[in-house]
Image 1 (cartoon, rainbow, N blue to C red):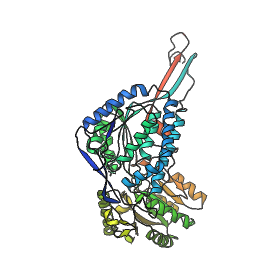
Image 2 (cartoon, helix red, strand yellow):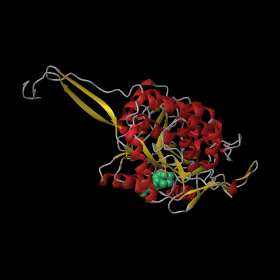
Image 3 (spheres, helix red, strand yellow):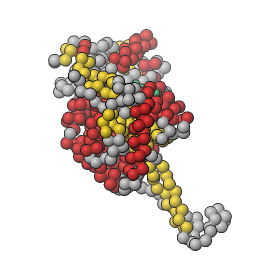
Image 4 (cartoon, protein in one colour):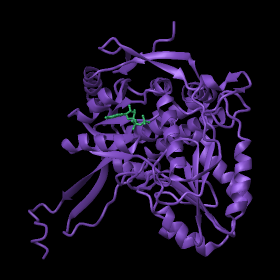
Length: 499
Ligand code: ADP
């Protein structure tokens, strides 16, 4: 019998009111059933929201430094259980252990960062325009928040939201992705072990179309944070908009790495290998376009193709694996669709372009959702493979003649999450920082590598103006309260008595 996992509502593990379950399988070997999870309903979300509201009434009164202490203990437990957590994540998500350890580490960094924010959460005080009067403004929690997460960073993305949200005094109804439910359960288990009161984080598993929608429509859930596809993000925004809920959207990307003619090509090569094929290209910040200056184009393509051909596909639990499987059949079909589009558009396939077969050690690649690292050259900015997010190990190579053209190509897509430029020319680097339309720009480094204490998010169609990570996330998880204290002992009218 596979292990049966449950929802967590008001500190108690429980089944769904539907009595139904869904399966969690290993993408590297879909014959391996990891467990079953509740296929929850709107009623389960109602119960979770009621628990979160009850918990909020006392959690908001706990001093923020005390709330931070719980996160510090959470971080300490995560440090102790890091390898175990990474293994659970690799089994259900597929990326190699080095990467899942990194994913857990990001959660640990966020825990310690947010623990210390409990002693800051700075307000802003300004002078009053009247005598004998004091003005203060400070951050207050919002209330019950909804959190809807994807599968590509099963630990990091939930922690980016839960930890700052909790330290600021909010409570949560959390719906993790259907493909990575176990990591989410272990995370809330750890929060409870660290002393988080019952009801502060409630977890409801199930489909986006039922549980996700119920979260966006529940009147007591006042803010929703969503990370996922642009298509779903738009639905989330529309649903939240009907009740004027706060909503933080982190959606698609079509990130480019630019390599200029004066770049350190070896460094640029390492960067694009990691950016394009790390996490099997399934990061929001993955490098899906490589914009090469014409002077180094042919040499770079040759070196890149040779190096990418050596990447070893396999089960992420094996130390010899460089690239794991993609997450599921739907995602692999989507990659196949885009590879066909690329061929039909006239791009030249110089590597990959097929479902992976054969064996990798004891792993039969045909039992998992493996896809070969794929490179297209001769791509032009108007092709669909240059414009649309693929979310897989597929890289489109474009050619440019100048920095201006490289930046123009970079900016020609609707998205604006991450970006990177390799050059030794400080003037070119600074112009790129100024002119590239993206929330994140790396100089001489790959498009991936966000740090927990820096703002994370994108411009244009990638997001809706909010940021996760660092101090900026508190702008989403708090409201401002303005306070006027008049100690003059008489009625003082602003704008009237002092004019
Ligand atoms: P993916 O293509 O990775 O499944 P999605 O954007 O569809 O990306 O999913 C991201 C998260 O959003 C998942 O937890 C999913 O269950 C949830 N989700 C899907 N559809 C909806 C919806 N209509 N409303 C709210 N959440 C949804």
